[in-house]
Amino acid sequence: MRLGIISDTHGYLPPAVFKIFEKVDAILHAGDIGSMDIIDELEILAPVYAISGNIDSWQIASRYSPILVTQFENLTFYLVHHIISEKYIRYELFRKNIKPHVVVCGHTHIPAVSTHNDILFINPGSISKPKKSAKGSVMRLDLKKHPLIPETIFLP
Image 1 (cartoon, one colour):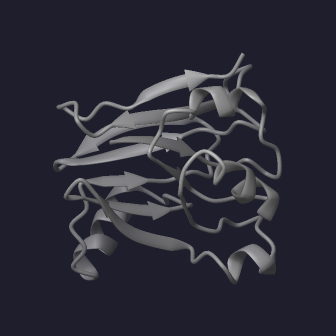
Image 2 (image 1 turned 135 degrees about the horizontal axis):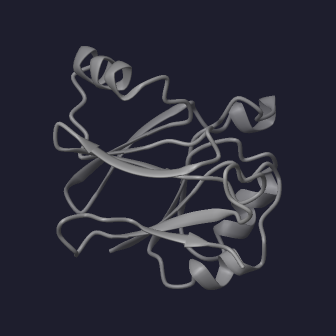
Image 3 (image 1 turned 180 degrees about the vertical axis):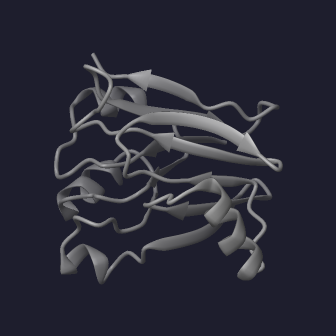
């Protein structure tokens, strides 16, 4: 199974995303969607699992919660827009008795991948308003490959 991972679209979906995500089985959107049109467009490619972010309207926030726990290929994924710190997230996960294999977040607009206590943390960056990079970014994750290492793709 291959996942497309995206965040911080802010209402803008570049055409290049359709080519990058054309063979994914599902898409994870880590918030700041910006417009329901983004979800509609992504759903043409694959089912979308999304959360709301801090800029999202009531229309989006009423449909998508700020946190989502879901499973793919017996791996638990925890989606949250803000990561205050990985230490805080680990505390929250422990407190809620959630044991994810992967945490997907957004908000920083900077792509990042790290591993702490056997939890893979993924931030795909932003395709609409990248920071520290001249290009927007998304990620793909192939769940058949081990170790799990997401592929960062910078848009042209």
